[in-house]
Image 1 (cartoon, rainbow, N blue to C red):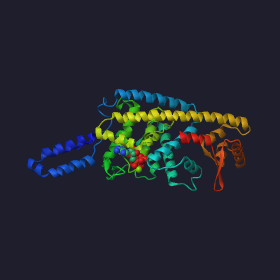
Image 2 (tube, rainbow, N blue to C red):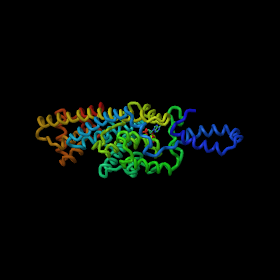
Image 3 (tube, helix red, strand yellow):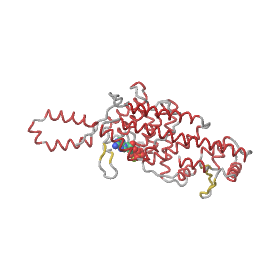
Length: 401
Ligand SMILES: Nc1ncnc2c1ncn2[C@@H]1O[C@H](COP(=O)(O)OP(=O)(O)OP(=O)(O)O)[C@@H](O)[C@H]1O
Ligand SMILES: [Mg+2]
């Protein structure tokens, strides 16, 4: 039988005590029971260590330190670049929705950009359930970001309300046993998180302390982020939504650590590139007790995703400059900074948004949009009796980026 090292200690402790107290003949008779117990323990009971870990030498290896430095360089570049976009709401809105779309895709909630942006325009009418889920995720991310930005700390209450916003229920932390992680194809149990409600609560308090108290260990924050994500998914504190909540915590942790000002590192795209690999990496720590491959995997994700996000933001920045110059030249009478912001804040816009952002009448907003269409800055579409207007080049960047 191959043991998960995290379970092994617990199992050996239990069986060791059991052997000592059991007379030899009893032991022979109950050999079958012993094997049954071993199998049961392997599958069903896995003790999680609290944080911080006692032995750091296994974590910050040479390879990890090298990759950490690379990831930091990219992340710092991303932070600086994002700060150079004058209106933060442009990146906040577009990139939050990108992340929401990709993170929901991990959960097999699949939606196209077109459906997502249309739902954002007309959500009160015909909304696909998937669009609603994605919008819930975006709302949860924004809500978590606002909380972390205002107090610099990730409280347990914030995590609970993020999950509540994603799942739209208030079940809170798991109280009843029965949650297991299964192989979707074979239905085999891969991992059983702690079952006892008190253990779940205790581990979550420990994790939140670890996130917020800086001198619990001297690990690099990016290495800590990898550990935090693994620990959160292993506690699996909720009945559902653990993956999505955990992915939001990653981003918030970077903001809390001042490594980013805005929640714009959408790591979920890295995970869905190869979802099986993400699950395999999570489970491998448990199967072989080695942290290094997991930490390297996460650092590579931060590195790659920062690079992709930098390219996307540079392209958005260039497009903003082109639109600014183009509208100023071709439609000088209607050019206003607020109008430009509107076209980039909402890749799909509509008359009401323009009226609101520019504080103008319906007639004027309609006139502005029609002029932008006539000069090729926007493409007009119809849904029922309403019109909406697409910033096609921006949409293309978001689809590709
Ligand atoms: N072997 C494993 N060990 C620990 N965590 C795992 C393992 N396999 C998967 N996970 C985590 O569990 C998450 C799924 O849990 P859950 O269904 O509660 O979350 P979700 O948000 O509804 O789903 P998803 O993550 O698919 O969007 C995965 O995304 C992953 O983060
Ligand atoms: Mg789920």
